[in-house]
Length: 194
Image (cartoon, rainbow, N blue to C red; front, top):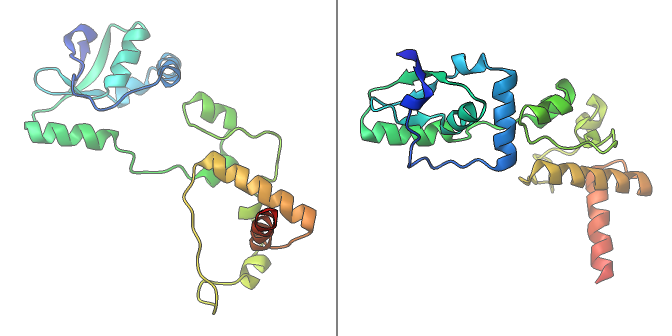
């Protein structure tokens, strides 16, 4: 059941496994102040004793923003269900589609809204490596081609952007068409240095 209650009735969860850094907390407070209607569609989740199970950081930010009452969802769950919810509610199952964000969203708004977006330093071709024409991809080697294998690396987005920037610079400087050639040139330069 969802209802409005006085913030003073709510008890922060002493076993909340989540933290929020000062900068993120300030952004959360600002977000609530600028878009308070969001609180009505994402109520704080509490148990029968009014202990917060979901929304501890929002509760702190709501207090900081000066609100006196808030929407809550009261649940009647076992101790195990409460623990499971606390973790699952805070788990990050999804990931940002950085290409979609880069192409369809305003970077300044994303940062303002709390997304840890990259900072574009004026290099418009940072995502050039992802923007391949149909001709380039049809002629590109495939994982099923003899002698080829797939190489993947998971890295912070800002590191990926930096890597793409360097690879693009090497492609331009050495007049390479393929990213693979640029990467191998970097390796050759490093090996020759030693």
